[in-house]
Amino acid sequence: MNRMDTKKVKKYKQLLLSAKQSLIQHVLKTGSEHVSYNDQGDMVDIAETQINNTIVSTLSDLDQIKLKEIEDALEKITKRTYGFCEGTGKKIPEARLNHIPWTRYTADYAQKLEQENRMTKS
Image (cartoon, rainbow, N blue to C red; front, side, top):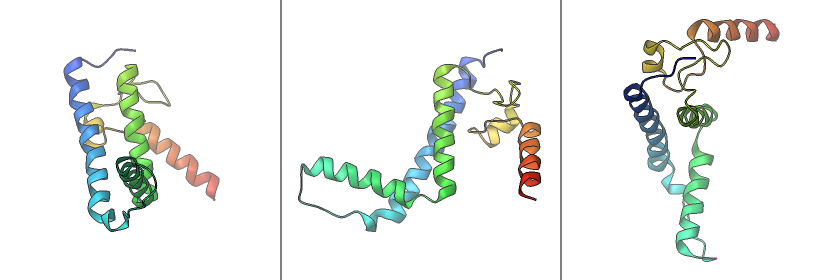
């Protein structure tokens, strides 16, 4: 398995971090009315807990899945396995990574999984 060069890894890591930050910023903008104060414990601990709970509870199911996939992709960068299809082990084309940097599969393999999923639901 050929590894991606360092410059490209940095590019994709930045794209992933930006996508993660965008999700979190969206939640903070839309979910800030849900943050409330409770006088138990240290204010900083309470605030941090409230913000984390707000982020998780405000994210839609799809956003939670996306956030998990972003975090998984960031972990793959650390493990130096980023950019390879989890189903085939083949390199994921850069055009796909540029469009969906958290993708786990090549387009062909993702399509195959989708077809299999539709067949099992029928």
